[in-house]
Image (cartoon, rainbow, N blue to C red; front, side):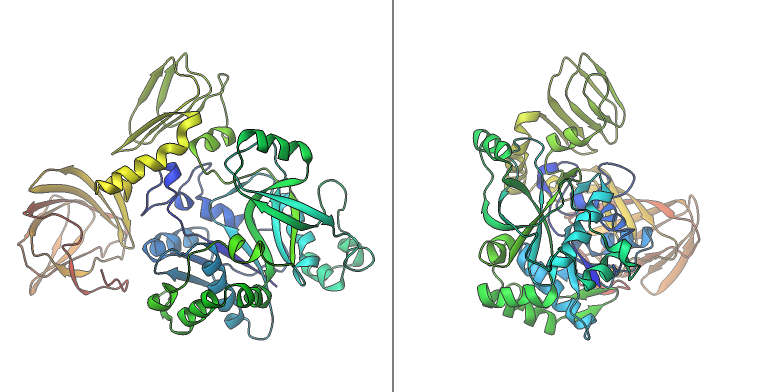
Length: 503
């Protein structure tokens, strides 16, 4: 049994302003009409003996992750909530611990997949995973991407000796046959060994190189891009963590042991998890173990880690431009232009990136887009909300969007999903006026409960206990006008919440 362990944490600041801390790139539709997370799971279709996924994500993203999985009819084994980000090693550790809890009578293979990558050749990806199953029982597998150019934005892995003669006489085992083919006839067990399929020991991991070194790596054919994808038995990765990072493992064991189920989620115990050192699985285990094996992957992989990567991966017009949204250009070449909410026009640009959202615009030469992280850091230093959330913010009950904001008033457009309700709450610093645009609302206001339909409104005085819900079968749309001395989202005192939110 293969359990996909999908790592859906991270903030994706390199794709700001589209990706924000509370709505990161793995939840965005960057290449088609599915999110990166959804595509990560859907590309597993066709692999034999694959279970539903385990998903690890930040607790702030939990409802969006659950909603996106429901939208593609996926019921995960569990959605594990990290109270804070601790990089990939602790995330994989808690996933492995949880997998062994769920499958007490077996030692499943974990297929570790970051939720924010693109793989264009799904067939070749499947073949690499199937081929890797024969080694994953004894070794820790990483998938190294065959480089197509001297990329300086990726880490590299240098291969060691060829492993083809180290498992059986021909590299096949009976268990591998059953994993890859579901127990079909022997002819179906043949492994494709021509081309790029193979396995090698790991000589070393190397950091992101400069261009000259990257060129030498590619020309040597001894190096692969570090994809961040792995496969190994759950028990084996825990044994390696026990050897190399015992304190981290103990923290993760305690965080799972003292964790609790919370609606559709498993919430790690925060104080234990936060004791874990923040470290990648590369540094924590793969660079130290003698059991590492690399399998080459040539499947059109890209981690879409920058706006330039989106340009490289996107469909280009006759002038080598990638254009999304409402964009009109003249004499523009080799550029990426993305309009989310309004018209973008451009003249005379070459090799540039222009990205527009409702509340921010980013412009840069393509060769300097990595510096967007510096801009995000400046925004955070200045306590600018644009670094953290969009003007449209998603909640488990629906969404709200800020239309106008001044010192003592704010106007929002609120959408409540059918059957959903907001928490029972009150505010100490603001009053609210609600006007229904479409649908039907039930409003709790103090001791009374009223029903509102289109063009009807109500006023919620400061300090009044209140709740909004949608009893209908269509979305409820309303306009909210807030007024008061403080309009921050943290001015909410919750008394009851069907989604289990504390804040």
